[in-house]
Length: 417
Image 1: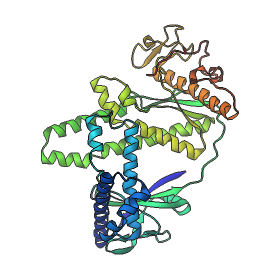
Image 2: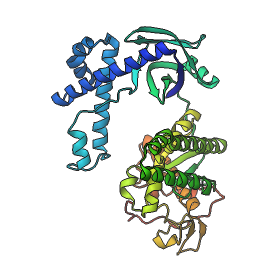
Image 3: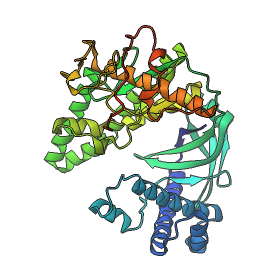
Image 4: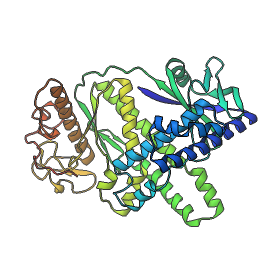
């Protein structure tokens, strides 16, 4: 498993100037290569390298930086094509998609640049690096990181590292190839329901980040809107100073939640069942106040954090269809919109079962996780499996004993949400 370890560099004045000039030249070259790729339609790594290599060398880049610039451009076009295929840039013919397809991919003046071991060397005992620049090779640039990061770098660093300039500081994002941990057979699944009122709720009844987190998010939203409305130079300076504060807050919160969920699953020997929320922003329809909350929180980031932390702990993670998990009764399987009289309450109109709405949804996700894992296991043995997770006859019988028993399965005629 590949993990990125960020370390901070502490270059002196001359080294900073050399690094800044290097990033500027590399990104100028990337913009030239990007324009050539857009003009000719050549976006493959090898083909683009052959097309632009000599021109990039003339600009003053050495052999390896020239190759990495061409590969960076090819990677940017591969990402663009993937976003278009996934529909992230709108439907065919939409204004946003035409704008993205109608011009070359551009690179900021100080955008990150990858370096391999030919251009970058690490002196781990001295905690310094040596790196190629347009002004020659800069040596003995100090770096700093935490002790766990240092141990990871020392044992597992392998491959490229990205030179990053952000907010006046210099970083190296080093790639570490950590051996995979053997995934153990799960003893049941811990369902995780993601939401707006509560960022995450587990099938064991644990709810993460409710009122306190919402207050912080709403305060940031109000302040951002106020500063944008003022529009003065001082307001713009404050917006610039705060532009990453909310992102850092969200990432830190997501890390804490993901770590606690993985720890809970590790303690109980369970796997983790997550909702497959791909395209949720295009599917759901919310009131205006809720739209800001939905689009400002990194739900996908939380899912990635849970996935990679679980992988490092050897815990199984499955993604299930979230359709109607919030309206389905975990006791009898009855699905009805009226089962949700309000945001927090679930009350089944068929059997009368009542529970917190997010806990009920998380338990439905856990049941589908059991069915999904059983389907995968039987597929490996060559056994025919049901088409939908909810149709597995064994899934509901495998629920933890602390959950309500079930008497009905969900209807087979469930539409996608």
